[in-house]
Length: 398
Image 1 (cartoon, helix red, strand yellow):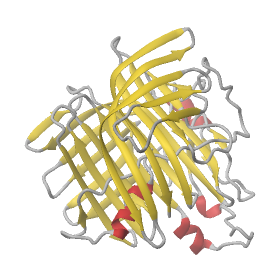
Image 2: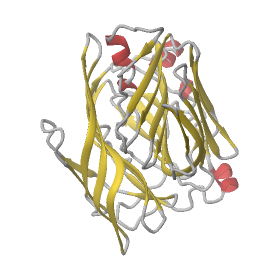
Image 3: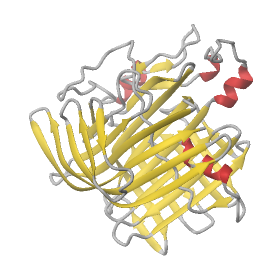
Image 4: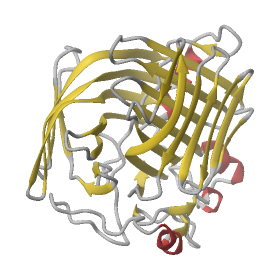
C-alpha cells in the first residue's frame, strides 16, 4: 500500500530542479489498517474467506454501501463486502483533539487521497501513484527490470494540488495529474481500471486492469483520536496493455504481468511507523496469488492482512515481521498468528531515504526481492519460491 509521505516530504525537503521534476525520490508504499467491524465480524482462522464479494457484479452494485459517513457525522468502521460507493468526507464531524468542531475549510485541507497501482512480472515492475494532499500534490512513476537491475524513476510536484484531481468514488471514479508534458490518469470503465501515463522522457504506460470478478478488501479504520482512513485494496489482478521504456516495448499480457491497486483516503495519523510486505505472482499450477501484509500502525482491531487466490479474498490474522534493519541485505521473516503465512523474504536491492525537516520526518527503506516459504490455506499447503515482491520498514511524521 502506498502512503503519501514517501513522495511529498522529499519534495518539500529537496530543491526542485528541471521544471518540477525530481529524480530518485522513492515513494513509501504502505501503512497497515486494522479494523473494528460494527457490521459483520470475520472469524480470524485459516479457512475464512470473505463470502460473495463481487462474484456477481450487478449484485455488488445493489448491495454496496452508498456513503461512508452516516447521518450522525461518523464513518462506518469495518469491512465492506461490496465496497463503498462514495467517501463523503465533508459530512464528517471533524474535531480537534480538544473536541472543538472544525469547519469545511479544515475538513478539506486535512483530507488526503491517493491511488497507487503496481504492475509486476518477471520482466518488469512498474509503480504509479497520484497523491492529493491539498496544499501539495505529487505523482510518481518508477520502473525496474528484475533481469538487468535497470531502474528509473520520475517524480513531480504541484503546489496547491494544481492540475490534480481524485474522485471520492473508489469503485467508479477517476484520477488525473499533469505537470508540463507529463500526464497520468486512472479511470474505471466497465469493471476495468485503466492506467495511462505519458512522460516527457518518452516512457508511456497503458494498462487495463480487470476487476470484474475480483474480491476487493474495503475497510475503514480509526486513525488517532479524531481521524479515520478508508482503503480499498486488491492484488494479483489480470491486466493487459503495454509499457514503453528504455527503447523497449513490453506487452503486459505476454509478460504475464499482474496488478495490485490501492485506493486510500481519509484523515491520517500524524506520526506512525509500519512494516509492509506485498506480492503478486503466478503459481506453478497457473493460479494467481496476491498478498498484502502490514503491521505497526492503526492497530485498532482487525488487520488489512489478506491473500488473493485467483481473485478470491482470504483474510489473514496479525503478522509478525522479524528482520534486522541495520543489516539491510539480511532476510525477513513474516508469520501470521493464524498460521496461514510463513514466508522468508530475501532482498535483491533497496531504496533508502531519510528526511528530517521542521514539520516532516521520514526514515524509509523499501526492499525489492523474492519470497520463499509456505502458505497454509485450509487443507492446502502452497509452496512459494522465487516470487517477486516488496518489504518495507518506515517511520513517518507529517
